Image: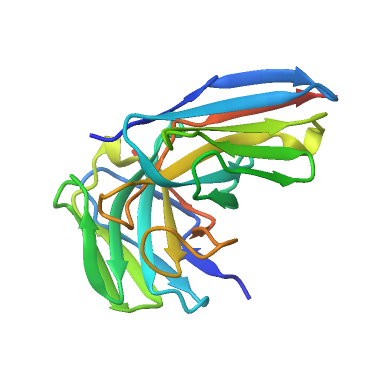
Length: 113
Length: 117
């Protein structure tokens, strides 16, 4: 079945350092979404990308959708303690059941002040 | 004014019991979901309803039975609870199918932490 893997599983950074998580799908995606889940919280939608090669920015966060629409990345510049949490990518399989959103394995980010 | 609300937030119960989790959304969304998050944080879809109609039914034991009385509500009933059912169950909703309008994704409830002892 469709698999969406993220690396790294866990990253510990000092406040002010940059952070990147990578998302790879076994199948082509029609879109990629990113969510953030704070410890003890629920996933919160950050952004959706739909075009091949698309890049979007939200303040210190930069999201990219790969040319082949099988991978994506999230880059955080100058991390802050408020960035702590697990970041999930999620996507719909191109040509698949269109409302089946498959989540990646997640990357847990820890930020040391 | 909570968008997607789940009850209860915590549920501790013995093996073999039957329990229900309720979910309501006030966003006017057409589609609702149940996701299960295990101890390793993997989020796996269980069910999806669109306008009260079951759309997705993943390989979930038939002890799990979702019910959608109307498009604003999606409940989950679990029979004969097992230790392996312990997890956090999230309800979510979205405007429609597949790719969402720009700026929209799934809205999740705060989750129900189920512990089976």
